Amino acid sequence: MLILLAFIIVFHITSAALLFISTIDNAWWVGDNFSTDVWSMCDTNTSTCMAITDQFTEYQSVQAVQATMILSTIFCCVAFLVFILQLFRLKQGERFVLTSVIQLLSCLCVMIAASIYTDRHEELHKSNEYRIEVSKGQYGYSFVLAWIAFAFTLISGVMYLVLRKRK
Image (cartoon, rainbow, N blue to C red; front, side, top):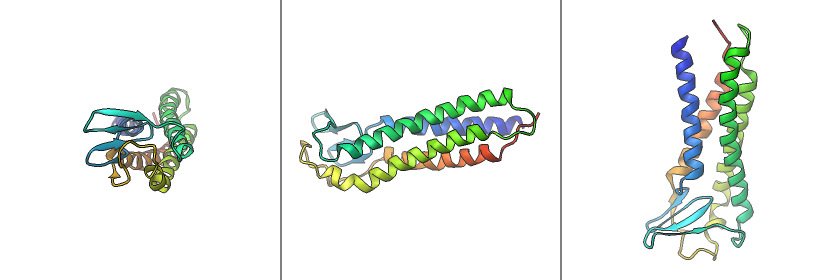
C-alpha cells in the first residue's frame, strides 16, 4: 500500500511539474531563429524578447490559453493538497472523489488551452506585429508537454476516482 501511495504522489507531482514547465517555458512554437509561447516571442539571434500584448490580432485566443493553463496548474496543485488532507480525513473505504473532480478540472483546462492553441496557431503566427517571420516554425516541447500533462492529469483524475482509502 505504501508503494502505491508513493507512486500516486510521484505521479501527481510529475503532472504538476509538466504543467508548470509547459505554462512558463518559451517553447510552444519554435523555429530556427525564434521561440514563442503564450507570453512572449524571443529572437535567438539578437537575444531579445517581445511580450505578446493586445496589439496582436489573436490576443484574445492567447489570453484564453494563458488563463486556462494557469487554472490547470492551480487546480492540479489544489488537488494535491486536497489529496493529502483526504488521506487523513477520509474514513476507511471511502473514495477520493473531491480530489478526482479537481484533478479532472485541471485536465479539462489543459485540454482547452492546448486545443485553442492548436486551432488558432496559424492566425496567431501570421500576425504582422512580430518583428520576424514566425509562421514557418513547428510545435515546441512546451506544447508537447502540455498534451502529456493532459494525459497525466486525466489518468490521475480517474485513478483518484477509483482509489479507496485503506489502512
